[in-house]
Length: 437
Ligand code: AMO
Image 1 (cartoon, helix red, strand yellow):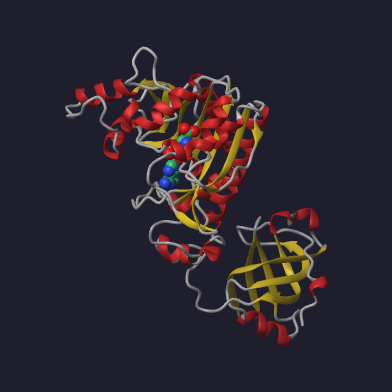
Image 2 (image 1 turned 30 degrees about the horizontal axis):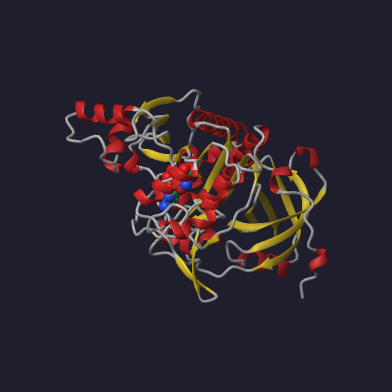
């Protein structure tokens, strides 16, 4: 029986260096490679920090242990105690001369995928074995970058006086209107999984003034694309006394800082991915929706003001603007009820989408903050006033004007890591065909 209290690591693989020559160390990792060359066995073990070489020689190892080591299946987790010595291998400056070995967890053979990546597998096969897939350094790198990106985003918000909040994921009314809701039975009533924290974050500007939330949201969209999931992480912000330009500035700061922080803090991970992310500079370019339509028309595309910018049209625009840029002043009919219309031209709104090339990263704007106007817009959008009553009453309590946006973290991660399929950057993606693992 394994004595858990004796399982101790003195060093991560990345901490083994010449300064430890001659010292006894204890390392823990999974076996990536194992090569027995006559009287010597070379093990490459990996841990979360990197890899190390372990050597067992026949002359120094009890015969029984030597025979055991040879046969341990790859990806099994072992603990090795031994002495640090210089290595002749080109990948390692030092290696551990194994003296004791304990198998902490044995892996089966064959495994569903090869996490070294030498044997390629489809994204679906990899996702079915996601926990193992993450032993591949180029997969783990994505999620280490994600961790740093989240820290950077939080830091920028906090520096700008925003408070992090957590609103409910189970809601009684559709935050965005529309039909893309998953419903569930809530003690005999119908409840929904939140599509966005839209109504809550707006309400919170009344008291907390500047809020942000980073959380999972749910859309019951049937579309099966490389940029949509049915559960995604949205970074949301909302601020009192902000107009849409103030909100856009915060988005610029978030983006500029996240790319800077990741480039500085994730050098090793970006090298593993062999990718250098863009280096956005603010202010980002801004084109109005009408200018975008004009440009498409010049390219001979038959399109009218009021038509949506579909994926294929955004791909054309994205080729010209292969960077971060805003498309502003969208037509009222293409935006939700809570976006304020322009006083001089109510066909258009105080809205923006933040794009990276063809990819929509965020959308937001100035909100309707006067109750009568909000009621008018709800009616215009064919939404039932009664079901919004708990939201509407807030507008009687001194609601400041406010603006905000929602940013798709997973899409941002695609740009940060150079991945073309959103499933690559999400640990356990949920799409129409995938509910496990
Ligand atoms: P919107 O619906 O545009 O706006 O969503 C905001 C951002 O979230 C990301 N996103 C998605 N990512 C992956 N899969 C999906 N199915 C998905 N849907 C959206 C996109 C998008 O730009 N309440 C407003 C925001 C606001 O006005 O504050 C909203 O939800 O990157």
